[in-house]
Length: 83
Image 1 (cartoon, rainbow, N blue to C red):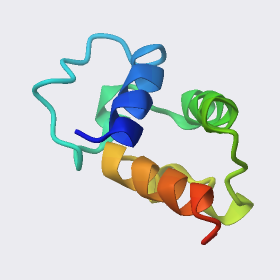
Image 2 (cartoon, one colour):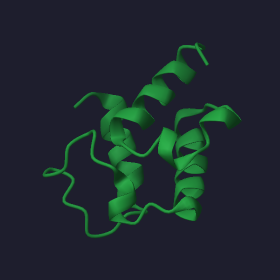
Image 3 (cartoon, one colour):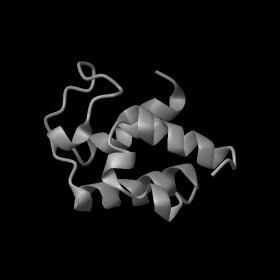
């Protein structure tokens, strides 16, 4: 697990309860663990604050960032100035 994923999992842990983070894959759909649209937006705001980025509106859909890998990819690309 790289630093970006580790930090994201730490943030997600504050919003998604009863998740065994060591036992789910990075491509697991987090909507099955309680990530609805309200929780998603709260998490995104926290991720933006923690990483010092602004995620473009076109990515602010649960289905575009419903896994740890998808979240990490968008964060990395935002940090690199690609998006």
